Length: 222
Image (cartoon, rainbow, N blue to C red; front, side, top):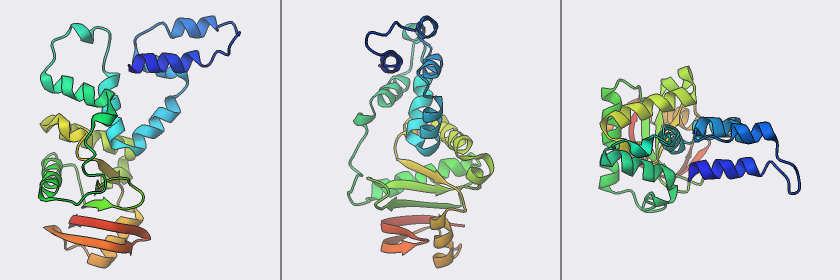
């Protein structure tokens, strides 16, 4: 599916009635996803998408590891489910799109935090948030790793920590990673200080740090 999409993108580089570029045609005669991305000329676009969307980065990491030999390898059921999720983003649950945050969601967020804490991935602020920027609830995590390592490397480290425990956690819950200098994080610290840790507080219909919040559930602010 992904290979076909990339080759279709490459094919569109040749206009109707044009003679195909021989070198490009030879380079595209491969099953390697990384090579096809390069020939399609979408490397920068892909990197930008991975840096801004944790779920996409997780899906792409899984898809990119596929080779033509993978079809002959014995895989665990969790690997198969993960690949299907990665190939078909539309299959993910949309139950959290605009609904009310429930106990199971709060427990899921707590589990993610516990796993990252155990892996020594630093999370200073954590909250579920729903606002006009997102079309669904997002688990927003602030980390100094984002400021120090950059968004992509920080995302990969967080993903690896979650994947080591449960691969399903790289696709659900929907995560967003930011740095400690993000306006919302600074605003939360000004409003609540650094005293929220584990108890959980709800925030509704207000602006904090120039960011409008329809609703939020805050786990910690440090």
